[in-house]
Image 1 (cartoon, rainbow, N blue to C red):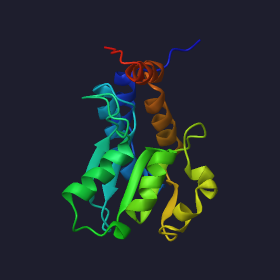
Image 2: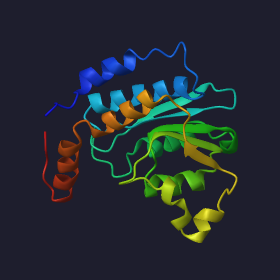
Image 3: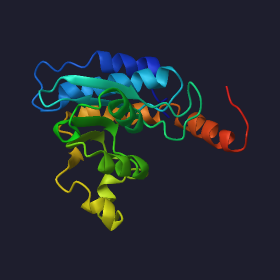
Image 4: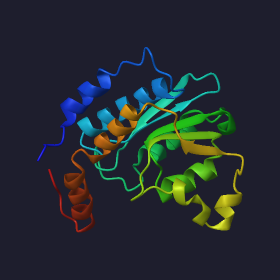
Length: 191
C-alpha cells in the first residue's frame, strides 16, 4: 500500500506547480489557495485555504483553516475566516464585486455564510461529496436560496492537478485532526 504524502511533500508539489502553459482560467488563483491550505496544515489545522479577490483579480486577503490552532474554533473554516476578515477589515468593499476562492467545496455552515455575505462569485477547487453543500444547494431552506440569487457559486476552472492537490491537502492528517475535534467536545486535549 502506498503511503499518503506528508505536509512537506505536498508543499513541495504546490511550490513546483508549473502554470506557464496553463489553459485554465483559475489556475493562478488556485495556486494561492493551495498555498494557504499548506500554511494551515503546517500549524496543525485542516488543509483548506481561501483567498478573496477584488474585481481586478487583485488579492484582498488570504486565509486558512483555524479550527484547531491557535485555539479551538468551531467556526474556524477557511471561508469563515476569510469572510470574517473581509467584514471586519474591509467594510468599504462591495461584496458583490468580489470573488472568494477556496480549496474545498464549502460545507453547509460556510455556504450559509457565503449566501448571507452577498459575495458575488465563489469558486472551489475540489468537490467534497461527504461534507460539501454546493452540490446540494437546492436543499437549502427557501430563505437561503432566495438570498442573493445572482451569486455565482461553482467549481473553479483549474487543472486536474490542482484539484488533486486540494484533496490531498485536506486529507493530510485528517484522522488526527478529527480526533482532536472529538476530544475537544469531551474536554480532552490532544497534542
